[in-house]
Each structure stands twice: as C-alpha cells, then as structure tokens.
Image 1: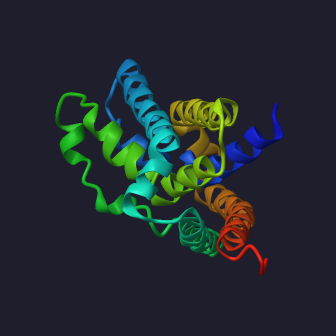
Image 2: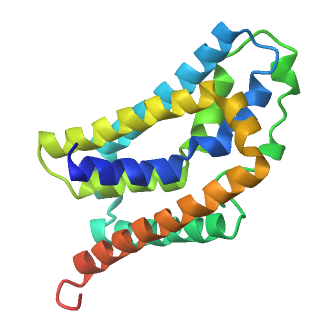
Amino acid sequence: MNTEIIKIILAFMVLINPFSALTLFLDLTRGYSMNNRRKVARVACLTIFITISFFTVAGETLLKTLGISIGSFQLAGGILVFLIALNMMNGEGNPVKPDQENFDVDHVQDSPPTMAAAVVPLAIPMMIGPGGISTVIIYSSQVSGILQVSAILIAGLFISFFCYLALMAAGRISRLLGDTGLNIMSRIMGMLLAAVSIEIIVNGLRTLFPDLV
C-alpha cells in the first residue's frame, strides 16, 4: 500500500477513533434489532466518508474564499490537533468532541428507529469533529493531481469501513477492553496523534517562513 495512504489512514484513525463512540452507539441502539443497528452503523460511516470527501474536494477552495492562507490553517490546525493529543494522553479524551453524558438517548429508545442520530451526534461530531475535518483540509491543501486526491479518498473509505466494523463489534469490544483498556488505547493514540500534529505544525511554519525553517 502507498506510504502516503498509510500515513493519512493513521492520522484519520487516531483523530476519528471510533472506539470513543462505542458507548454512545450502544446507548443509541439499545433495543434495536440487529438489522436496524446495521442501518445506524452504515449511515454513520457513510456520513464520515461523505464529510471526508467533501472537505477533500472543497477544503482548499473554502480557505481561499475565506481569505485564509494554507500556512496559517496548517499552523492553527496543527496546534488544535496537538491540544487534542495532549488531552488524550492525559486521559481526558478529545476536548473538541462532546461529552457523551450530554446526550439524552431516552427519546431514541422509546421511539421507532431513526437514522438522524446516526448522523448527529454519532458521526458528527462524536467520530469526525473539528480536528478530523481540519486534518482533511490540511492534507487536501498539500496535494495536487487526481492520484494524490484519490489517496485521501481511499484513506477515507478505509477508515469509514473500519468504523463500521468497530461499531458492529461495539458490545464485544467494550466487554473485552473495559474502561481501562479503552483508556490505555486512547493514550496510545494520543501519542501517535502528537507526532502527526508536530509534522503539521512544521509544514505550516515552512509554508509561512520558508527562509527560517
């Protein structure tokens, strides 16, 4: 597999981190049939892929429209991702994603299955939030040509499918890892994310100050 695709998949993996949404998915789909649980997982993961695809294609144009330079966005995005990484390593979770306790899922359990909750809050912002969207825009702004754009889309497709598998195995993963295991995994992903964020920050500094870095 292309090295660039692997790097993008790694960045998406630690930012989107479907394991952080397992508890919410189980709460949202409590009492659902297996068929309806699959539908919720499919809609959520399709939403993730569509979001990644949209910002891959339109992200750079959006920045230009707003008058934001690529270097400035890289630096700001890198700092945001680094702060997320620090919180994850401290066991505090992702600060730009909502606390699952803030969601009231009683209305979901007492009503017929709905796909709205699969989009918000499960997919957005629980799995792909500001950090993930920023990273997509940063990577898309660094590429040119259909092959490089395709690499990001392939990475997005891969991580979306991985999220689907994780959601469908949510019950088993939660029982197997428990709160301690999920916390350890979050800290490890935080370390990986910190390395990704430093690379983004350095690239932003190189863009803004080519003679200094």
